Image 1 (cartoon, rainbow, N blue to C red):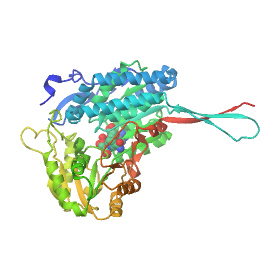
Image 2 (cartoon, rainbow, N blue to C red):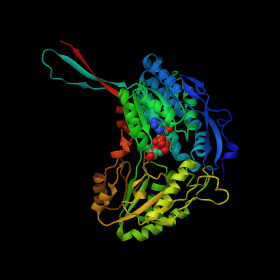
Image 3 (tube, protein in one colour):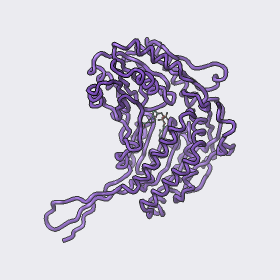
Image 4 (cartoon, rainbow, N blue to C red):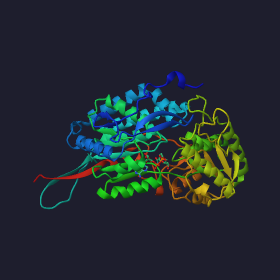
Length: 497
Ligand code: NAD
């Protein structure tokens, strides 16, 4: 069933979407807008203000004022918690609309909405709880020459520039908004040009919570314009970035001007390791969806599938057979499991890797070409694709494709599995499928990645840290570890005698 026709959100009317600066919804200073497209159909669904340097200047000034002089500073932890809880309730009441917006703009299958709802709400409520749980420490000192009371305070880092990708528009936004509000920072948020609408709608709801003007500002636009301006802006104290390695490197360089703090959540080429002793009924669909979930547009997707040589042929056959059962179609069809890729650009990127894989000598055993049949030919559909006989040196085994494409390779010993698994400059996710607790622990200890999922994949929880090793970046999203990135620690000394 297609859910769109009767439920089109009023939010998607014809008026161009504006920027949120200092509590006002305004056009871009240049008056420019850009189109956003439904990847299931190729149709334009909305026009969005194209913010640029001047808009970023105004937004940073508003965030600066809100941080330095505004009423936000006087908000107690309870009051900030209250804002986040109100936002969570508003998001809960409006969640069907968010699911539709992300399906229509990003192509996230509408069937995933129940999981997405729980994920988003649990994050918001976790951050609300953390607003009243941040505290410094009293410290015993050994100073001579008097008595001194020494303690630390945790203080908000200041104005945060949050720059995010398109592949999980709501979660990426909340991963950065939550700690901003919980710690008492202010922010300028730059969504991806490919998926800005849910961020704009979320900001509309945020304005209903009683949050002071300027605490959160939203500047939509492109990376080379608004994004670059935010990254180098001297009024910004921290950049919280999620996106590609290449952009992360540019942001790091741009941040040097005022030595702003930077956290980077970047890409991956995550290993997923299957032993012959694994429960195959769990491992086959588990390994398939580790890569094909969200059409493979997941930073921690398990895209390098290492399979113990004893079961290499059998596992490949079962994986390919499973991949062929997955329904590829419009993100708005309730039985779609694999939606479109986000854009024509992403389609071109992914199909170029399909050609490359063949040229490099890997063998396609499922999928392998764009879907072009009537009804789906206007959308950006690529079926789940399995390449077998992939070699570690092939580019399809080394580069992030960011589509539903998995490459399989055999291994014979656990040491080889670990070595192969670590043979990448990334270190974001990893998976292990085995019934042997010894193998599970060995790989949990020896894989260099921010997450190791054993007999499961892509598990995420508000209380568990998520982030990268190596070139997958640094800093963590969710979990207690994230908060230190949004806080300064101040040492206070008081002579008492
Ligand atoms: P991207 O790097 O192209 O863009 C991300 C954001 O950066 C966008 O908002 C973009 O406008 C902005 N940007 C681009 N150039 C910029 C510049 N010079 N200065 C400042 N901002 C700039 O990434 P994408 O294509 O949107 O997303 C896909 C990438 O994101 C993949 O590599 C994926 O692995 C990664 N990702 C990582 C995580 C994680 O948590 N580690 C999560 C999701 C996605």
